Image (spheres, rainbow, N blue to C red):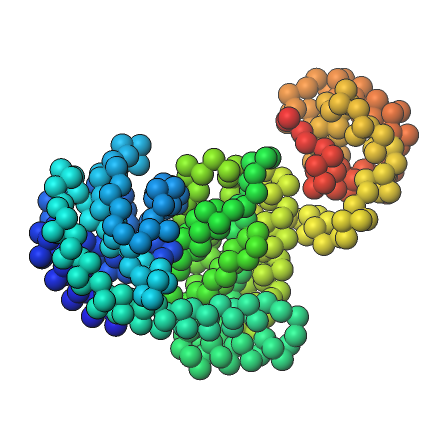
Amino acid sequence: MRMELQRIVDRIAARVKRPALIEDRRQRVVVYSEHTGVIDGVRRSSILRRHTTPEMIAWARDLGIMEARQPVRTPASPELDLLPRVCVPIRHQDLLLGFVWFIDESEGMTDDDISVVTEAMPDLSLALYRENLLGELTSQREAEATRTLLVESPEARREAVRSLLTDGLVGSDGQVTALVAHLVATPDDVLDDTARLALEHALVATRQWVGSRETLHLVRHDHGVLLLCGRHAGRGPAEEAAAHLDQALRGAVRGLASMARTVLGVGDARPRLYESLLSYQEAFQAARVGVQLPALGSIVYWSDLGIYRLLSGVDARHLDVARVHPGLGRLLGDEAHQVLLETLETYLDLAGNAHATAERLRLHRTTLYYRLQRVELLADTDLKDGNERLCLHLALKLARLTGQYQPGR
């Protein structure tokens, strides 16, 4: 089917004497003709990445291409490095299948040229319909099997592994590491379809970089999942894949005003595909912690979370700092005590080493002792008591996770 589409697009491009590119209805590149002459940044990026940028998608949809039944002439956009274009929608029995795009730098593409494209539309729409049908059937089988890998039922997960291997969607049943990508919306926004499309583009781009038969992906309501299989699931290759996905995510959401930042959680490797669920749960919790604690960075490894591995699994109804240490709960309620809390946390992080704490905070030792004494007085605690120190430390980390304690803000 792809070869048939390639022949059609090459024939059309030759007749209208300008390069052509076909996208599916989600604006992923399907085929394109030979490109000579003028080319802009958007076309160059589309060919190299095999998909269109989210900014371009949003721009084009604002011009009404999703509803168009006739060719649409689109203006230039210097901000996007985009030249004028002619967009011809491809429909099969009024079902939108995709688009044929032509760069029209001098706006010299005539109605006769466009007629050449529309005359080829019956063959083009049928070929793209078949291509989409085959591709979507494969994608649906893979998505369903991947989704089933992440359910609680052991038998369902075993069946999902058999299905993936039988259909040749993964190369082997070996090690697996889960990555969870979370897009953090700005305070007044939510994750919309454009953001989810950007998320999928980043996941697909990383799969192409790693190898499509050594990865699986899934887009859920508020996050995306990438499973690294076989030799790519070890710590070293997983770190490389995580770095690539992190960059792809940043690039995909660049320019989307609704997105504040991206966070990527990485679970521990498991020996078999059947155990993907465990790695996924870890990656999901790591991403969740990363959303709450920006200081951890854009890539958060479950194995590096320390006490947050425990706290992230506690039922939210039980995440009450005052229950862990009532005195610390009182301090958290007053911004005037922020410096005392930061001093206490550093002291506890450094295992009660006063010399190291004074150096880290650049304090005179006398000032440090004064602050710690103030903490003891206000929180009604004794820092020489090991149990008290444990409760204070745990309560501080819990307060970070719940947003009650945000040092540096």
